[in-house]
Length: 229
Image (cartoon, rainbow, N blue to C red; front, side, top):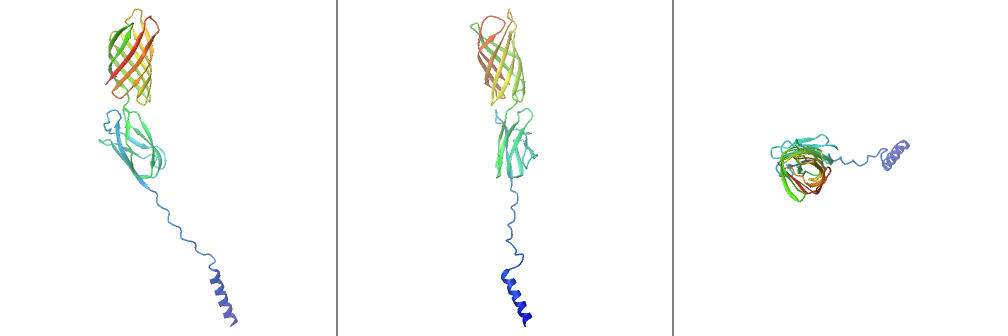
């Protein structure tokens, strides 16, 4: 009887104290990584025309290396992207590249406009007032080269006027130096001017109130360079 009583007492003690290794609450399952779609259209900033063959690339974050190419309608789609913050780079031959910062916590549309590089042949005129006389010369050759935001050019006009451009393009505007050589003059005249103005993919208009002559007397004022393609 004493033995049975001891067993009963031990059983009651265990029940009262609980298990030596009580089970805790079952942890909630971790939610899966959310995935979304980034899509949009790439266009020419000046004409709003859709651009095919543009490449949209994720450059950082967990989606780094993912890329898509625009179709004939300028549309791209990057599906199954992890929710995160990242940067996309958009490139296309003949256009300046651009980047955009993305916060992806839902499927979103991001449209991108690219600026056409100004490299190539242009037509146009240079208009100026020389010693009080207004003159206009058409360019027989105008070649521009753009590298990044740096723009240089060689200009040859009628009546023995030639020149060069050197400066930067930022936000659709050019700012830099115009050098003009009046080679038909006697003595030969050269001069420089600080010029600025809108520089779009098909039209550039640069102006300056005065051209500082270096090698001859006289004055050149109200210069305007107009370029189209």
